[in-house]
Image (cartoon, rainbow, N blue to C red; front, side, top):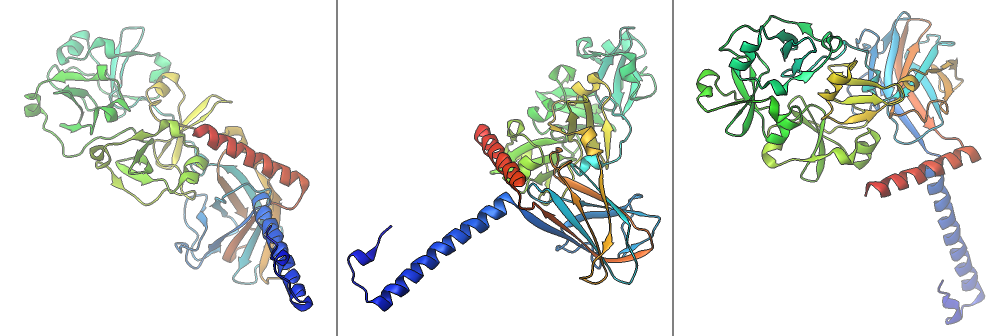
Length: 443
């Protein structure tokens, strides 16, 4: 520290002012460090939902709905309905204070609120078990041969049909009859001169898939190989386009592929690309940098870019969740999580990323009962300690509220916090250390 008083003589009055200024500066520095340390070690965050405009940008509580999926109109909640909503605070918290502000004088005392934790998409209802994907070539010990077409299992009538159409018998994957039960059964294939939907071809070293009488071209070999193996494609020459014209719609990578282009990371799903908001979103949402595919401009150009993918959004179609503890796998598909019951089926989808989840942990619910607050008026509140679920994999807290009377809500506030305590400080330090080690290892 430089001390100018060694070279400059100050009168007593100036010296007092100097010492006061130096003490104030030191105190301000220490206070600033305390404030910063407090925010890091004992974080807090408030999220809000305003019912007068559920689409407003200021709403940081997302996806308010009833169990039937309907959206609450103007905050009107019938006592027989369960209100569900999601919160995605950034950080690790040990408690949440829940505040319901009513528009009128309803009494919400003793109404119950539950909270559980996972990823938002993993809270989707369980759908129909997933079957083999279109284009899959399958065979059984009994000598039956199948192709999956339009989601159905179509049996080849005999070996002559297979050979005449040009399907390589070595491309058929051996499965059990138990594996086959997850696809509906379609009509047998008897024609020797027409191909079923889903059939794969290679023409002049470019891959195609037949859909509704037209050939859809994959944007690249890598896109094809993200879903299939090259041995599954029947080789044809360009005259084949006379029978099956080329479609204008290209085929991209497998849904759920994580790609990069222009310094940004994207989720590819359903012909659309979702730019991931930032580094933190990428990691918090469970993605792995090891699985990112760097795209060429023509590959990226086949996708329609969407708004940023943020912490408030559910994972899109094609994302696979895996629980190694229970050996369960699920794929996200149009608002449901479809279980993958067969290892043979799973292998046909394992070109995609897998995101770890805790199936049993996601079912654990904590609860509290609302009590009326003296101030603010018309406010009912309760607090839930989150220690039991805070370590469960996922970024999303899903809350459910069962109100004891018909109500009109004005707003909901969620105050996530980490109270000052030695235990919370050590927990925060441990998580910071873990994050630093994880970031270092990733590099």
